[in-house]
Amino acid sequence: MDISLSGEKISWMKPVCGCRFTREETAEIIVPDTQPDILRVVCADGTPLLRGKDADAGRVTVSGVAEATVLYVPEDEKGVQKLEASIPFSASAENEEITPECLLTARVTLCSADARAVNPRKVVVRLELAYEIGCYLPSACTLFSAAESEGVQLLPAEKEAELPSAVGEKTFVVTDELKLPAGAQPIAEMLLCTLQMTAEDCKSVGNKTLVKGTAQVRALYRADGGALCAASFSSPYSQIVETGTPGEAAAFDAGVMPTGFFVSRGVSAADGGAAYTMEVHAVAQCVAYCWSRLAYIADAYSTKFDLALTQDTVEFSAAPERTQGESEASGAIAAKDPSEPAAVSAKAGSVSRTEKDGITTLTAGVGVTVVYTGVDGAPESAFRRIEASCELSAADGAAMEAFAEIGGEAAARVTPDGFDVSVPVRFTAQGSSRVSFTAVSAIGYDEEKPKETAGMPSLTVCRAAEGGSLWDLAKKFGSTTELIVSANALGDTAFPETGSVLIIPRAR
Image (cartoon, rainbow, N blue to C red; front, side, top):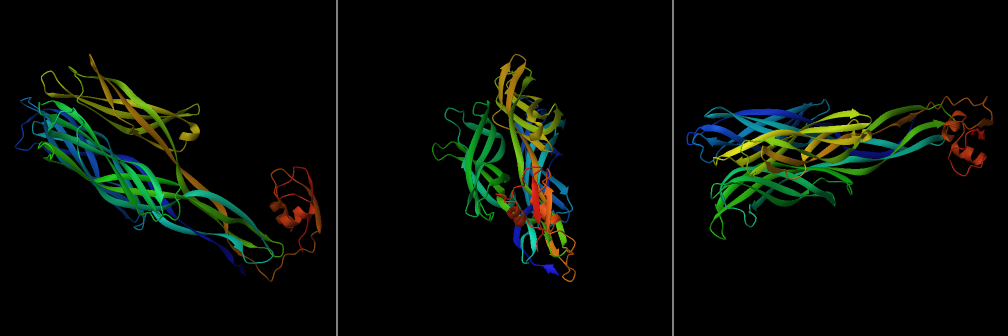
């Protein structure tokens, strides 16, 4: 017959696919008939916009467009011209556990952007995009912790784990006027705008999640006098994400991805001059982790019957372990006739790792572009990829994937031969954390075949062996831990000192 077990249903979001990878996208841009021919390309940049994320049987796909801008000097070497293009992108990851019921998170960032002129009327743009995809399957399992039967001894066990308990998202819009700081030259023409969304703070609000962050816009513009100028604008946001978190979340993994980005020119109500307004459409994505108590039966036996146990290996993916380190990419960039930089931009590429003497070294290439004005008054640019590295202990860096991001403003100082640049870089090493154990899920026995105990002694005397337990002794000699504790006047159920003499009474 089967023994009735009682327990608790554990619901969680099972991560079935989590990956980071890079892909390259290329596109051709034709110069419109209304614009002059290309003399030379100055720089290229862009902003990836997420448009879709879909799960199917065994595959997850992320798609969107990268709004790219290329600046170039025309053939008459007067001023600067811009070319704009929406470059579609798409990438997939495969895993046999992915189903249409999965909930997804996705982030796409621009690692590098460059352009070259094929001829005076056409440029080829190359973008390197980094994808971060999470795929979570709503899952549940029951852990049994009690049995409704006399004479059955249970070995209870318990673990605590920070499990992904909810996944949610919220679309929202941020609008704001791009106000220049006092003393800055007015904008005559906006040449290049890029957007970065950050999620800086998350906390539980009932069964919801509050996500706070910043929409950061970096711009390169032409002033009224023709000079190139850079500006940075920040707009805070605060959004409530419906995660349905069952209780107070212990940790969050949140990210915000733009889905649309518009900068429009209008007229200032204050002075009648030009005014620029940004409109950002975005989606906040949040994974909430809650502490769960996992109580289960590790083993069972009976002093009356031989039990048939069904034992399953149970595994949960817990909150990822993260370690961060700060570094700096610095070096010299050669440039012809350098002048005070108009703009400095930096992007971090993929991370490589080496290990030596218990130390893990993470290294990333950081592409730095400096835009300045040449001696002839036309825009120039200088570019170099500089390495940044960060050291972690082997324990921190083992079995982890790593990525790098720009940690602040890039700076450039003019030298006779070019520029000395420095860029703060933040490294993150992230590894999966798993909780696994063997749990009893079913107990049965044949009530017509009781255990043969006639030849077993009523008392057994033995010595406590190193690594032993009262449970093991009780199971071996047909006793119980309570009987052993009572017969030996043990103060608690802790195993006595190795070599101690123990009396093991047989249960009746």
